[in-house]
Image (tube, rainbow, N blue to C red):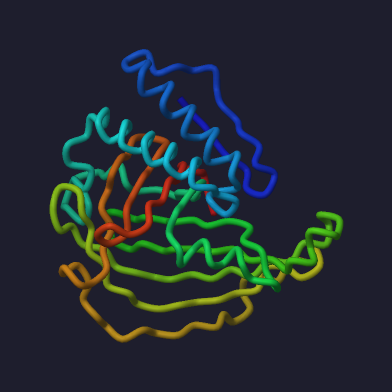
Length: 231
């Protein structure tokens, strides 16, 4: 089963393939994706939608076959199902949803690029001017923000984090692409170990070949993502 969700247009795609091994899971995933798309990744969420999405997440947790989703994370000669590029399609994390309140910018896309072999995890946010909603798509402008972190396996479901640096780069202005060779604004962060009870980590609630659901820290925001080819 292979899904993809386009941000802003909220257009939902699904292949004809059905999870023959677990048709119940297939139905739940379709319901989850529809709800994520309908409410603009959580930015247009209401309480009823949030409850329904969280109930679907619990159902997917119940049906997850992988009992050790962090297997292979920085482990020699092991592969990890977490590796890849993931596009966020829903969250209830207040720090992310607050980005949608900006009078100046809109959120075009939020991604997480995970390299389980090296342990590098890059969180990516693409922003655009809010006035762009009134302009033709040919006048697109993009600012890309990246937060580089180093992850380490804490247990079967949890990955601790060390934050390394923050980087920003203008990708395009009024439809004109900015050469990637131009210097980026980069700030190194203090080396603070993450993963203790009062620090940063994420817990894998569900993962398979095309869907990743994580919760940042304990009792904090949940992120639903789908795998994409690139970011």
